[in-house]
Length: 373
Image 1 (cartoon, one colour):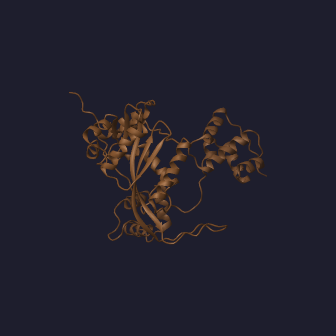
Image 2 (cartoon, one colour):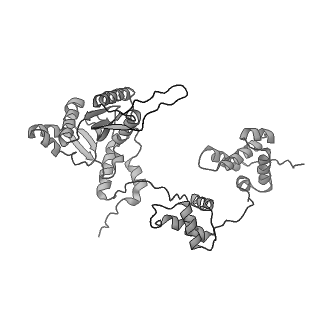
Image 3 (cartoon, helix red, strand yellow):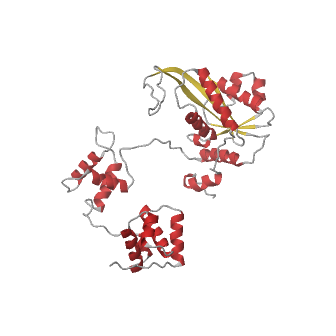
């Protein structure tokens, strides 16, 4: 007959288990053992605990036994499991990691499990090595050499930091209707049409469309987003020239914000996004009139993520443009409908990144000031 183990937790142990269950990253098995111990301490029976935690009765018994005969740490940890020893020693595992991080053999774009297993046989005394052994050791080290991802590496220098903190400080300011902050960007869109009409969805059958399509040119989207009120504006144009940009700035001043003293525009470093573009499009007096109402703030190079409107463009693409539209007039109607609905819903970007967070997270990348002599 099994011994009946009685679990009696101290207050400190209860607090530790409760904190473990309330948050943090722990293995599912460890969390279940914590639930078992708390339930046993509360007086629940083994069968009741097994049903509540969704484990077998033997798991409840072993967890209680290890706590009573040992301690809390033993009850929560894994018992040693029988099985064969690891085929790779520590040095061999380090060699595998180093090999996976090195260049692949000539003629191959990247390492595969098969290539790595063969290479380890050449570099060690093993006569053979299974793909599964290689996969497990790589997984333990969070390596997948057959995968890669694209990212942009900015140069975090004084100019980068200055522009970043300038934009972040503007986002953090209290709203001022006389000095609104508007994020601006542009995005090209392809006009894609169907060669054959899609077959509509029906009961038990998804909508089907042909892989073949025809391209009907491109248009450009100029997108405005107010950082402090639920307003955005999308303008569809045939081109994206400096004159088109200048026209957008005039509409921003005269149509969208006629009562503002100064409109602070956050934008990227595209060559057309300059004050000079207005002099290319308008007479000097008109260009000067518009520019007196504008104040440009530029994001750092390779840091377009600092522009809130990038998020809004992503929402637009996902909610409205994730389909084939080949008619520019239809595209304008669909975007206008999306814009009205999103403005009416008072949707806004909840920006959380601040200058203080930037300094805490990116402090090591900040340039070191020169020491005073």
